[in-house]
Length: 114
Image (cartoon, helix red, strand yellow):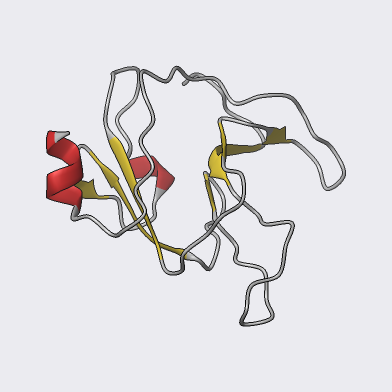
């Protein structure tokens, strides 16, 4: 993407409900921060080590996100850009070919083959 300023969310799944553990999981990944419930993010099967800069630019690539906890709430993709502490800022630029959600953990190399 050619966007330069602000916070860009690849996915944002901050939950509106409490879990049985009493806390709300933080499931988001952006160019500036990663939620505590995200264990790993892979780009074309390669571990990004949770660094936005490790994603390819201006090419199609496959993304796999692995959570540390099960979740049942919404996940927003390319949903917003935060340019200030109180600004919603608009949407992140990008295109999506397809989305798959699994009810169990799968290995990144398996997900890349799908």
